[in-house]
Amino acid sequence: MIEVRNITKRYGNLTAIDRVTFRVDKGEVLAFLGPNGAGKTTTMRILTSFIPATEGTAQVAGFDCAEQPDEVKKRIGYLPETPPVYQELTVSEYLAFVGKLRGLSGTELTAGMDRVMERLSLGSVRQRLIANLSRGYRQRVGLAQALIHDPPVLILDEPTVGLDPKQIIEIRELIKSLAGSHSVILSTHILPEATAVCQRVVIINGGRIVAEDTPDQLSARLRRSEKISVTLKTPPSDVLERFREVPGVEHVLTTSEAHTILIECALGRDIREEVARFAVGQDWGLIEMKPVSMTLEDVFLKLTQREDGLPKTNDTSESERH
Image (cartoon, rainbow, N blue to C red; front, side, top):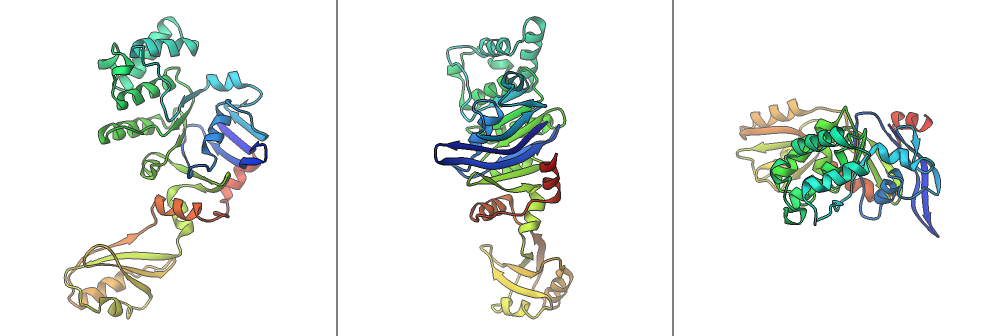
């Protein structure tokens, strides 16, 4: 649905993005992550036909973003970080205006407005001025304008900024519900959000793609060892030294939680049974034992603090060849 092949954007001597390549399949939700200045906004502007790439090609639904911008825009719903709303209009007036810009009229326009208002719970404020709405409702109106023409592709830039926890959950559930019928690129700094709603992650740093995979696979590829969190009721003062006696244990570390330690062993090895047997045999009161994996935050920080990132997976390499 979205094909980005070796796009580069230069502003004079500054290279904002450099040979960026990725794809988004039909019905997929993709997280596009990166620190400030990494090239996310430039990439989004190229995909929405706002600016052309200096080199390379970007296509949406088979249409070239530089050569066929009108066709691309018909198939994209875009929500920038600041919702593009006119505060002097009511919600109904604004959505009718946007719908007409999108080529909707008559019953098609009415049906589109009713659909997005129901989906985003805007019915109770449809006759209110946008200027009098809360930040959360303005964000919903911004999302409604992106959805009113039922586009196959959605590009969402920080869609939950300014929302309260209940609204965040509702918007996340909405984004998940769009999977399958829409291809979605979600640009966000809220990494748990990417984990909650996205099937795949692209991380950009310094204008280049440094990783592309599922959150779980990224974690597995960066992991250097297996980690186990162990919580004991009555650990002795020399518990770290004692656990080092267990075969396979390489490191034992304290944590910020009382009576909880972190045990490391070689990658691919499972020593939970040995650790549990040892703790129980010492009568330390084994309360909990669980494996510990890298979070998406851990992956993000590691990748954006190194220049080379990770080697691409076979799947990524294949997508570049298409």
